[in-house]
Amino acid sequence: MGQFPTDSSYITRAQTWIPTNTINPESAWLFENQSGTLGTNLTGSVVYVGTAGTVKVIVSGTNATQPAEVLTLEIISAGTGYTAGATQIPITGISTSSEGLVLLIDTVNGSGGITAFTIEEGGKGYTVGQTFTVPGGDNNATFRINKVSPATPAAGQGIEFKNVAAGTILPVVVDYVLVPSSGAATDIVVGK
Image (cartoon, rainbow, N blue to C red; front, side):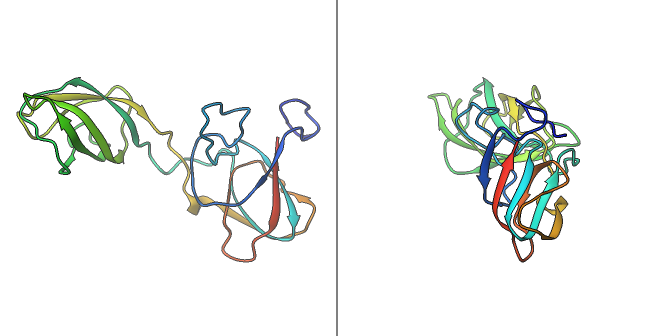
């Protein structure tokens, strides 16, 4: 017996799926993800193989190895003495487990306070609520991390099912269907 949202024994929701090595933790199911931007996370779906071949998947419950990245920041204090431009500003010293956050200052006000910025690189290992001072200028602009991406598994954690016969439903539930090394199965349908 399966575990499906509207009937425990039958797939009641399905969609065709093209394997991708893009790991996006947002749900690929519209009924689960109403944000308007679908990800590639199949959130515990079953996989039906229409044409025989190899299927590579990341099984649900696989431990995340790709750490969280910073998605949004809030300016707490704009600071003074900063200049706008394409100079990359690496952010360091937030915690011993975080690294790689890089900002670009897009615009400043009359006193050199940061009014707009771009996250050039999201880094890894950050958590919501952490605050930091932006280096440069008068070293007094303060930002807070408001949103980070969920930690995700990596494509290298996928397992391959070789020579899967047409008409087979894989014996595992999956979060991601990836591009296999060779001989890819086609006509894949995922279901819940």
